[in-house]
Amino acid sequence: MQSSDGTPQPPAEGLRTGPVRAAGRAAEAGSPTAGGQKVPAVLAASRPVALTIGKIGLNSPIMRLGQRSDLSLEVPPGDAGAPAGWYVNSPTPGARGPSVMLGHVNSIEGAPGVFARLRELAPGDAVRVEREDGSSAVFEVFAVEKYAKDAFPALRVYGNTNRAELRLITCDGYDPQTGKFDDNLVVYAALTARS
Image (cartoon, rainbow, N blue to C red; front, side):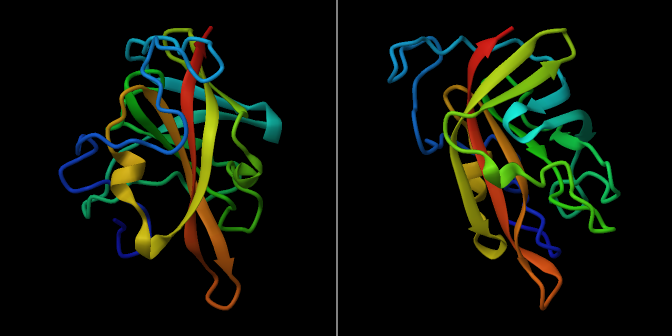
């Protein structure tokens, strides 16, 4: 689902729309993964304060985002240097379900946005979220997918999961003729550690 301006939006009834099995590993929290290691149990709720992705040199504070009146997700400001944002109606990072974060691929002025290099991520890459309680939730990327904005799979992206997961969402597929992005890039990651 998307708004009139192409921003992805959760289903009208919110994020809790029913079970969805995301691509990749589907290990239950506390059960062995394919590598024989245990996925940590889900973490107690604690708001995110910072996002770090070493592979792409990303270090960003986290702002809070809600919903617009048309039920589409708010997005961070389009100015250069704008931070990533966490959708407050999604689980906190490390809690059961898909925690949703959004960021721009570029700024209004054309400078690189906080998620400019998100497409460089691949399965196995680490994503760290610092939490308000002083802990960190560490996630491992298990899929990177691109979707046309007019065919955005809202249930797949925002639907319930049986473990703590993270969704990082940005625009992709820039069309120089229209000056707009035709696609969304979604990074899927699962909780692997707490520190």
